[in-house]
Length: 266
Image 1 (cartoon, rainbow, N blue to C red):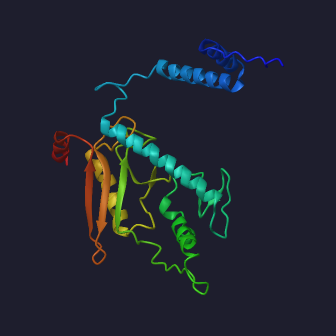
Image 2 (image 1 turned 180 degrees about the vertical axis):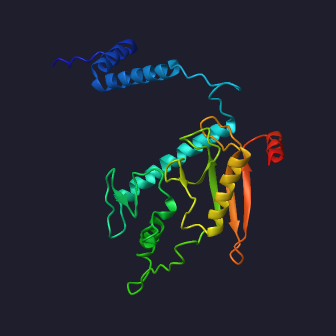
Image 3 (image 1 turned 60 degrees about the horizontal axis):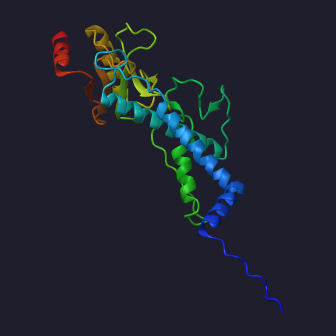
């Protein structure tokens, strides 16, 4: 009987060559290598991008670290507001659906108007506001079947006695020293004029009128978000319910020396 031929064991070098050959024929291996190469190319492209030069102190468009931080916060708030709006449209919890289009109406005001007063959005139907719908949705599975989530409404007009309002330069006419005072329109940094806001206490509306006229009379420039210039930035009004007296707080955007000049003018 002839003994079966023994297979020769391959050496380490032959095994390495065989493994390399198998790797070349392996499509998965080729894909991985290509992916790594493409990622390396993308990273090199990002490194080679030319970054815009930052404006230095005294140059046009220069923003202080505080202004840059505020700009980042505004962008983050706008993204969050846009996300909330999209979620609200996709999962509408109310029985009455809001029509969606550029010229549409959501609630009781035209959404297409960027200068819409947010205080009047749900003035005619306060129970349709997002806060009430969210509360109903949260408690509907927690309450017994024979119980319902009741919403009790207070006065619809004149209920706001504490208000912090933004003061900005007139965008239409920058030379006009009479500023725009009010809240920001939803999702923007555009001032919604609040000269006669129905949600405000009448003392707040009076304070807004007095401050606007005083700024024009004393030639006090309002704050501008474009270049960061201007003096008066915010107006805070607290009203005492019993007497209707108003406490006015002015927030300035300037150095103390500039404020001294304003005091001398006033």
